[in-house]
Amino acid sequence: MADSDVARWAASGAMALTGRPDGPPLVTPAGVVNAAVSTAQSVATATGRFGTVVHLDGPALLGERAALAGMERQGSVSVGGAARFERAADGWIVLNLPRHDDIAALPALLEADIDPQDWCGVSERIALRSAADLVDRGRLLGVAIARPDERRRVDGPGRVLLDGPARSVNVRPLVIDLTSLWAGPLAGSILAAAGARVIKIEGRNRPDGARLGPASFFDLMNSGKEMLALDLRDRADVRLLQRLIGAADLVIEGSRPRAMEQIGIEPAQVVTDAATSWLSITGHGRVEAPERVGFGDDAAVAGGIWVEEPDGPLFVADAVADPLTGLVAGALGAELLAADRAALVETPLSQVAAWARRPNVTAPVRATPDRRWHVVAPEGVVAVSPPSARMARRRAAPLDAHGPALREEFA
Image 1 (cartoon, rainbow, N blue to C red):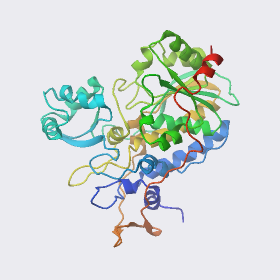
Image 2 (cartoon, helix red, strand yellow):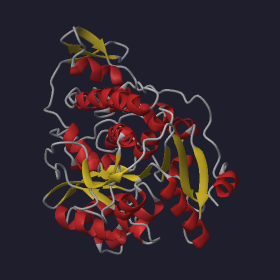
Image 3 (spheres, helix red, strand yellow):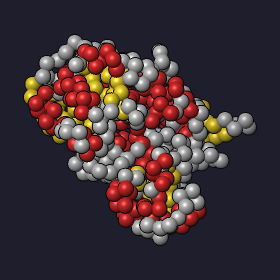
Image 4 (tube, rainbow, N blue to C red):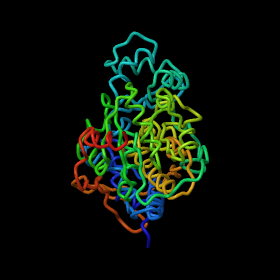
């Protein structure tokens, strides 16, 4: 008998991260593993078309960061601690504040002279505002806020925005990775494992924020990549970036569209003129919400991946839209590298979540005297496993480790 959704969910580590800290792990969102399993299969098929087949345990990826960082479920607060459900005047919202600037923006968001560290005061102010107004204010201020189920069921996790000209399929394709944190770097790591040459580009004064987290997680997402740091306020560095993009087979990019526009790079033009494919990872879509910020926890809720409980809503796993989107982007990136035509493709976090969402699942959960949890699956009683992680084969290179050589190569 093939493993059921319940058994795969229990074994993935994601179930252990879902639920209240003082209660049992939850079975309810177990159907999400279907998307992780099917996308991992797509990764294996697509990577085999241009290089080494990459085999991944899709469901296990959902808990990797938590495993390496020692995180646990926190219920209505995200596993990472930066996002939380709050009650607005007319319903729930998710407010995600992973950066210092986000916290500093709370007085402007709430249009009140409040102490951003006074969370009781912040909650009281949120309760006076409508959810839609808060989401609109968040969009203007660059703060990640979402309402549950904003994005309804979609046909797929990504879409082609532009079909480009014919391109050569290279034996060892060049990928420029302009992403940070989790989803984009995971996609880049998949392509590197398949045999692509991946150059990760970071801001010289604003490197990937994941470098501040567990080194083992950053290594897992970025080992095997060449590292280049650029100052995009410097014209010479912008020209170098343009040369790299022009030489690439694929660009993976995870910023809002205006970030590229400000330095004179237009993805559609790159696809058309250079026959370089472009894979865009945004919070909510390049077209629908180009200026809106989104991260894995809030975008997952916007796409419908959350748990509704009588005592209030709960998060599912750890920033679940991030690893799901990383898997999807890895598969799409591999397809683009194997294709004989360039294209501009997007895979927004909230769209991936809406696609991955499945109907709720029910099954009894039992605790042993030592507080180990088991779930009754169709196959029998299955232990709820803690999250686990792969280990990187080697350390990721330091910031700008390959800068001198790359500057000389692409001079």
